[in-house]
Length: 499
Picture 1 (cartoon, rainbow, N blue to C red):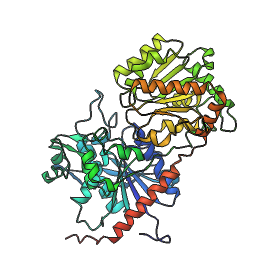
Picture 2: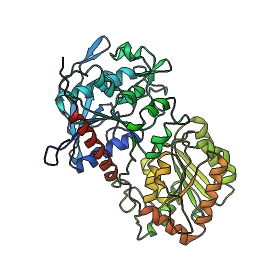
Picture 3: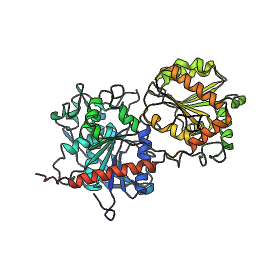
């Protein structure tokens, strides 16, 4: 292990997206925030991502004009471009137009995955390893989701005897086990891997090839984005067929909760909201509620009723089926509901019908709108997240800071971040239910409405949430400890001979 006086640990991130360069979901938020938090602790951090058509670089420079990357029967020659970001993080981009110069990151216009996704992210993973050899030799490679899943596999197979890599340990983070990178068996040959990996101990998954399974089998450590989720994925209900693999590696799985970027999500300085406020002065939140109702076209008198906000993908994973089950009974209550998101057609249509049927109570925007998401966090009284499963979730964390009380299902990161409110002692930050049913959701919402009717209790509940701290610094320190452990293990291993 490096001593305090030695060079700082060097960490190489491998991820398929990251804010502000690219994003489709929570992975982009993590990749955009965690490296900077690690750098603030004194680590040297570089992040490798694909250079997509939509990626915008301010001051790019060519770090390597050409890497020689074998893939199937061909060689490819991507270049590596660097952009220096804030917090001294180095951002390295794989510039391979044949694979990444496309309209979207993962799917074509018809909504289907690009058929060459194995080659796209196989090439990306091989570039990560080559970067680790010469351009940014790290102490640990930290890989994220299936798109970087080949990196641990390559290090333990094709590159195992390469002395330049010197037993570099890997951390692999599961952001959502439901996305696994599963392809036909011929994908192995297409990305240059041998048939010996088509085994239970390798990458075979019910007759297919899974990049994610390869990472789970070959990474030195596996992390998830919350403690509860690390336990849930080892069960048949949430393991997506990989629970057996995960249970075999249970001593190498650690749940580290994602953090919140309070530089972007804080009502005291949020540039998107109608008025600023904080725990000492809540007056601005009333103005934000009025602004939100106006934005959605709900009546001015609605400000007297509790306002429930939703910012979500409209899918079963996010609990849209539970909302459908109880919508009419819920809307019989004196509430208002605003929803923002996109998703499965049947649930988009559900929200449209509710907005048409309950014109004075429900409003929906079928879109991705960052400004409106901020307005909902600031203007709503409650934030609803009835997820079937939720690896971490960030909106409930944002809601706490905005004094918007979360109503959630007790799963994954929702269980870890929200403490059930106890009116007897005034402690707690929100409301939770465990059984995945519409009845449980409705009962919990009615309980929340009963507390809302008691202003003193509700204010205390709001303040409890606003005083929580889920900053990235906390998560970064946990990752720092894990990297240091791995670096110590690496130091105790004999170096490979290369013979």
